Amino acid sequence: MARPTPAAFDKVKIVAQNRRARFDYFIDDVFEAGIVLTGTEVKSLRFGDGSIAESYAEVKNGEVWLVNSNVPEFSHGNRFNHEPKRPRKLLLKEREIAKFHGAVERKGMTLVPLSVYFNGRGRAKVELALAKGKNNADKRATTKDRDWQRDKARIMRENG
Image: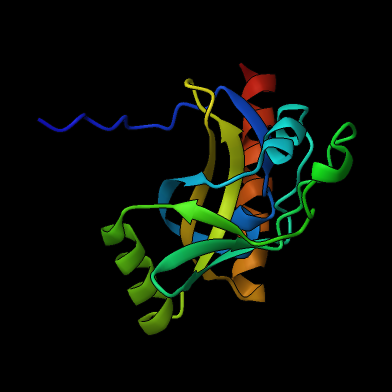
């Protein structure tokens, strides 16, 4: 019998978030992916270093790669240190990879990492989203809606 998957991802320690992604893209599906790291990369991430602000994922030869993510060198890593901006392989099931490949090729969607975190078992994970880009009008509407929600909450709080 297969192990049931949890509804929400078990995020114990969030290392990096891409907060701009929710503003720049319409998020369709969100997936959890493992990430292949070297020892010094894991140590650097455990210290809370790392950035995925300008990174994206791409499908190449049946594998998914995280490109342009920055994990700075570990301070005590000496000659075994890693390259900070190297492409990192993401661990996904074949069916998910096929879904990503089809969506990126046919529908013009993008694979955007939303966050890097450690789960309850201490494994480094990437929250990966299948997203479609917004144009300027959509971004203005998002800003307007967010401002209205903030004002509405303030008015409700003041008037009780």
